[in-house]
Image (cartoon, rainbow, N blue to C red; front, side, top):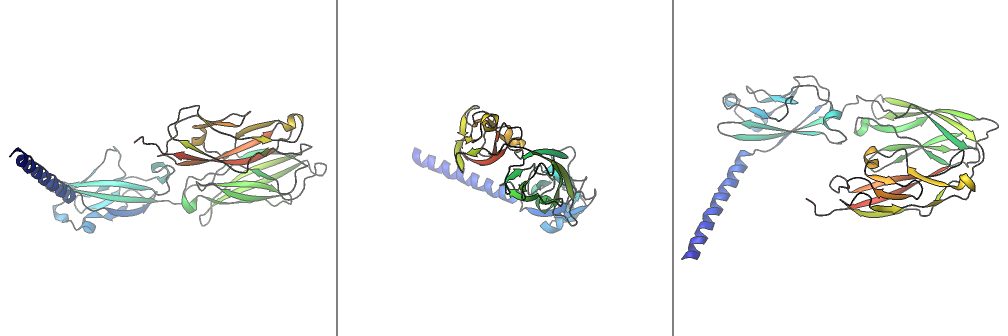
Length: 347
C-alpha cells in the first residue's frame, strides 16, 4: 500500500513538471534575427517584431510591450504602438564587441497579460571607420653588412579596430633595391610584416636606408597607416643564434600555479664574446594578453606561468620567441612555441 502511494505521488510530480515545461515553452517564443550597420543614426528602424512574429499590434500598448534591459542607456527601444524595434543611440561596434568577430546583441522583449517573452538577436555589421595604425610611427633597425640575401627581420604588426575585410589585409614597402616585404599570418588572423634582405648591403656605399612600410585594410578605397624604418648598416657580427629544435610544442593543464615551468628553448651562436652571448625575449608582435600570463627568462629561455591559464578562454597559444646575441649590431632569430591547453573539470 505504501509503495503504491509513493508511485502515485511520483506520477503526480511528473505531471506537474511536464505541465511546467509546456508552459515555459509556450512563454518563450522563437527567436528573430536582424542586422544593422554600426554608426547608423538614432531612430533607425531595425525590424518589425510584431509583424514578423504575427502579434496583434492593436493590443501591444495595453499589454505593455517593452524591452527588458539592465542597461541604463540601452542600444534599442521598441515602439509599443506598432512593435517596431529602433536604434536608441549611435552604436560603435568596436566599443560594444571588443575583439569579437561576430557582434551579436541579444534583446529580450516582454508582453504582459498574458506573459509572452520574445528573444531578438541583432547583429551589428562592421563599417570601415578606422584606419590601420602602428604602435610606433618610426623604428630603427641595426643590420650588419654581412647578412646574406634572404635574411628576415620581423616588424611590428599594424592594428585596425575594424574586423573582417576591413582589418589589415596587406603591406607594401617604398621603392628600393635592397629590401622587400613578406607577410606572416598568425592563428588569430594577425598579419605580421617581415622585412627581407634581397640584395647584399655595403656599408661603404650606403651607411643607412630609409624605408616606409604601409599597412592597408580591405576597404574600397582602402584606409592606410605608415611606419618609417631607418636601417643602419653596421659591421661584423656574422652569425645569428640557432635554435636547437625546429619545432617546440608542449601541453599544459589549465589553472596551474603561477611559476609553473612550461618549456625551455635553447639557441646557440657560433660567434665569440658578446656576439655569441644569447638572450631570449618575446617577439614584438606578441599580444599584451599573452604577456600577462606567460613569462620568459632572458638568460635561460625558460617559459613559466605568470597568470591564470583558462582553457575556456583559449585552448592554445602560439608564442613567438626571439633569440638575440649581444653584438653591437644584434642578430635575431625567431621561433614559435606551440602550447596546447588541457581542459580540467573546473566548471
